[in-house]
Length: 336
Image (cartoon, rainbow, N blue to C red; front, top):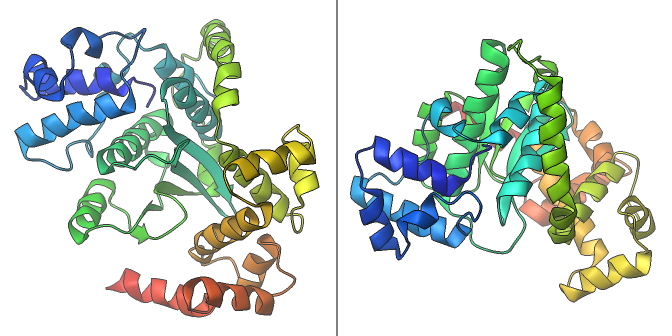
């Protein structure tokens, strides 16, 4: 994290003995574009470059690898912005903010879900998710957070969208934790108490922090205007579910807009508020059910249901299983 991907992969290509000039020629890019920090490549151009690397190496999991801190921190102020935090929770929140500054459409998203926290791969567009993008972000973030907090930081699991057995095996080998398959997002999963672990480094610089925070803040107004409305509404709905069923009036108020404005923005994308609430509850349900210390009754209340029976009725409509059957199926799968 904290590194313009095109710059990092160019340095990585050189480290692997590949020719950046040849890779650029194959990708229809100019070498000088790769190294231009003031005008980072689009995600589409980055994908072409990484695709060329994969063809040359024959390694489709090329970006699932330990992050090289010397390469990632080189002339990279956002690296120091993240690593100048006091705790893991603050570092992850800064990482989300910093990557919004860097990427034209994907970024890590930090969420707390009951007794677990996830650092998720999130997108601000409808463009296709590429495996190497997820591989890069999850492996890089695990390396950064491990360096930040040291061996006390334990990863609980990794969540992946449905994928191939070969990719699951590669993830289990790299992360040394179980891989959960299914919604809501590709993510690193931690126990909630891991977020309070401190920065093990003693060189936190408040002056540097003030400078970098100002650097990020200056770019944030434009970023906020570009942020996907569905992501904003998702966050607000998730927060309000802990206090009962969300209403469009309360969500609009939390987002600082009128109810009519929110309705219009959703309508522009052919979405309705009720459908978004349904989608949020459905996605969060599986995350909560993976947490064995949460009773199904607790999960129901956290999702805004009056009781476990109501939750079970809706869950069957979503997944053709009861919550307890889903949880048992997950346990059996983990034992295989």
